[in-house]
Image (cartoon, rainbow, N blue to C red; front, side, top):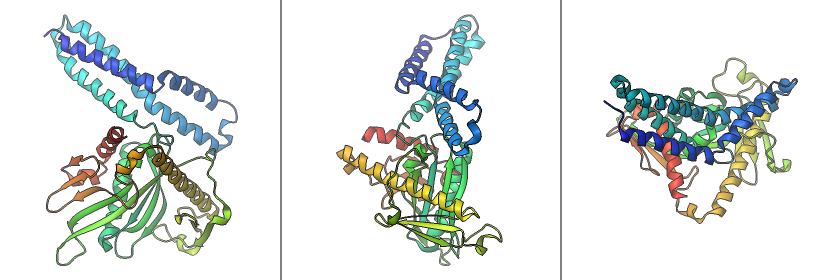
Length: 367
């Protein structure tokens, strides 16, 4: 079978789409910046300041997360040209072209989705916080199920997770938890998960086997470094020191190392208990507070810039963004985008990426 004109046209469309993407993402500038950073990382003394070095490492990871797939698709298109040439004479080679075209088109589609992550903090690591809401013990159990879902998603996508704070419920599940998720574009993907998540199922905690509706709230903040200025007056922050609770070995409940910070003007509360050192917990808690307040300011700025946001679903603890059904049928549906999956357990086992990508595309349409 000879190479078809339709296949050649599809390959050209991919090239055109890639050229547009390279221009919109400043591909050449990003390649140049990667080279400069790699040179900087080999300089003597670079690793002496670990915190500063990690900021640079995070930056180059974010750059490579966009540039590397582009390099790969450029290489795939060059290989495709060879297949087109050989396919004119060899039927077996020509038969492989449709599958290779589909593969390259899929790579381009993923790149186009990643290109939507263009917010000022989208490339940053993320601090994910989950709180049980209405629904009693079912809500506590539901909050823990969501925690597991996001950690499985993170692991599947090559991110690392660190529990910053976890408050277990006495009967089952958790009252709340905060997790640091590190990796390229972690905040960019997770920010669409902010809001209330609703679960409908037959309650395992109800002896009568009745259907129960429970709620858990998800909040996400970008992890920011010290170069980002956030104005916080020390007198506006109350610090409470308390003993850590929950899993963690014999040491946890013997020292008052956990830190809770309350920003009084906004009633913003953060806490950290993952370290044995009170000093480290305090430093992490302040980082969490700065991130939370920065996000509040960013949301205010966006609302002022566009009246359209008045018509969008409210982002925050008061909004219901997604419904998860285990009864009477199994499905998960996003109330903003309308995107739905018929396999509840697949989503809860970390398969939440399609919802994140659909949200990114939806935001472009509604902005």
